[in-house]
Image 1 (spheres, rainbow, N blue to C red):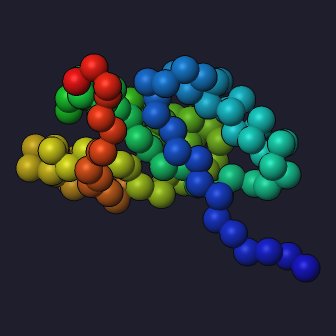
Image 2: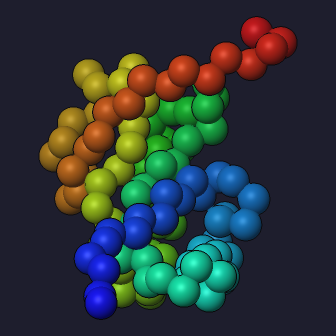
Length: 109
């Protein structure tokens, strides 16, 4: 019996092990090998938490697009913090934008 599924890889190009195209490719291979499932798409999530700005989003997304092309995997959407919803327009990206509200509260803040 074949199961239908969609397995998405969420990539933040500012995190360890996903800061270059080869690292992202290796991550895909390791996840697919250990899960015995194929990744069907990528979610672009470029951010540096509270230090994120428009430039960081665009630069990080550019790297993720390169990896997407090398891996022949579509970017399903890009996650962007909702505080940028007025600054970043949907026309700036080919992919759909999913605005999110982050709930992470660091103990030192």
